[in-house]
Length: 608
Ligand code: F6R
Image (cartoon, rainbow, N blue to C red; front, side, top):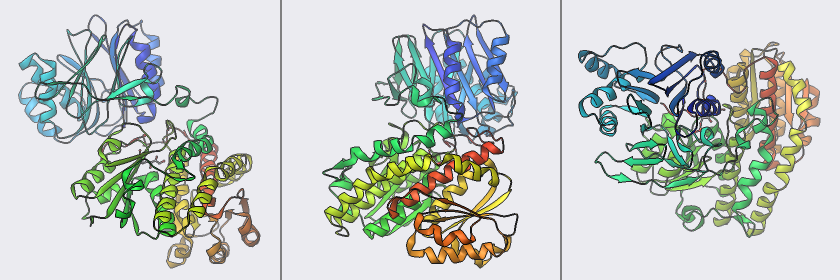
C-alpha cells in the first residue's frame, strides 16, 4: 500500500518521479506528492488521483532538479487530503513513508515538547520530525535514520531528502518493502518493481534496518553498527510491456486475458520427464516428511489455498487446513514437526502473511512460499519457495495470480499423490500433460465467450445483492467469484455451499436476489440441481455457469445458462473462475466503476 519512488542522477527528476508514480498508482490513489531539489526542496501535493498532481505540475513553472522523491497514498491515518499527503516536511528534510507507525502518539508528545509543530493528522509526520530531531543532534543523515528506526514501532519504508544535501537520497525500511537500483544514469528507489521497470534491469531489496545512501554515482548500504554491506542483487524478469495496458481498457481485462500464457509459463518449466519437479528439497527429495499441510494467505491467495486443499486431499490423501493469515497470526496454531506450512502471496509483501510465516517458522514448522514477486520478503523468509510466473499484476483485483497459484497447488497435489502411491506415474504424467496443454486451450476458449458473458453481466449489474452457490470445489470457486464481483462492482454478494442455503440463508432469496450457480462437479450434480430448484421456486433469477454435462439438467430451471468450454472435470473449476472474472469485470464496467482502482482498496496490503 502506498507507492514510493525516488531518483537522483543525470536526468530531470520530475518525469522520472511521475513515471514511477503512474506505475505505482495501484498501490494507493487518494493523494499524491513529490519533492524535488531545485535551489532548495520544492514540494507539490494534491488530493485525489495522480492526474491532479500532474495537472498542478503542468500548470506551474517548470521544476528543474535532478534529485527527488514521490508518493502515492492509501490513507491509514488521517483523511485523504492535501495536508495529509506525502511528502511530509520537517525543518531540515522532506520524507515519504509506507507502513504504519504504531507509537506515533508517544513520539508526537516527545517531539512537541522539543518544539516541533504538527500540521497533519498522519502518523508519518512524527517520523519526519523524529529524523529531523536526531539529525539536528548528529548532523549525520545515516545515524539519524538508524536512530529513528530504533525508536519507531510498527512498519515503515522511508525515503528522505535533506536540505543542503542536493544529490543524495536516504532510505531505511522495516516490514514494508523498498528496492533500490543503480544505473549509469543515476540511482532509483521504489516500493515496487513496476516503478523502475523502464530504467533498470536489476535491483537490491533493501535489507531491514539498513540505511541506503543513493547518489548519482551509486548506492551504499550501512548497517546499524556502521558496517558497509553489499546486499544481493535480483534480476528483473518482467518486461516493460508487461506493466502496460497494451490496448486494453483496463489492466484487469489484460490480466484476465494473459491467464493461459501465465499458466503455461508456471507449469511447463516444472515438468521433468512429464511429472512435477520443483527444484525444492521438501517437494522433490524429502516429500515423505510431510504429514499434514496448512495453507495460509489472505483474500484471493487464501481462496487459491481452498482449491489447493480440495485437490491435495483428493489426490494425495494428506490432511490440509486453510487459514486466513490475519487469524492464524493471533491464533494458537498447532504445528507438528511434519506440518508443511504453505504461504501463498502474489506480492510476497502482505504483512499478515509475513507475520504468519514468521510464527510458523518460530514454531519449527517447515515453510514453503508460493509467490509471484522475485526476491520479495516472503520468498526470502520461507524455507522453500516456488515462484509463479504470472508477470506483474497491476490490477488491484487479482486474477492471473490466482490461476497460477491454483496451478502450482494442483502440481503439488499430483506430486504428493505420486510419491504416496495414490496415482501411478502414467496417471501423473497424464494429469500434468492435460494441465499444461488442454487446460490453457480451455481457458482461451472461455475468453472467447466474453461477448456472451458481457451480456449476462449487463443483467447482473441491475441487482444490489446476489448469491453464488456451488458444491465441493465449485463452492471454493464461488468464494473467489463473489470476492471479484464485490470488490470491483460494489454489488453485495455472498458465496454459499449450495447445500447450506436452506439452513437459514435461503430466507434472503426473492425476486430481487439472483443466484449464480457454478456446476462442474458431476458427483454432486443432482444435489446441486436440487438446490437450484429450491432457489428458483423462491423467485430467484438463476444464472448457471456449468459444464456441458450439467447443462441439460439445469437448463429447465435456469434463466440464463453459460456452458463452459469442455475440459477434464478436475480442471473445469479453473475454467469456471475465468468466466466469473469476466462476469465481474463487465458488471463493474456496466456500473461505471473504476475497475482497476476500486474504492477503499489498494494492491499489496503491507499493513496489518
Ligand atoms: C483480491 C486481492 C486480494 C489479495 C490479498 C493478498 O482481488 O487481490 O484479496 O489476494 O490482499 O495479496 P497477496 O497475494 O499479494 O498476498
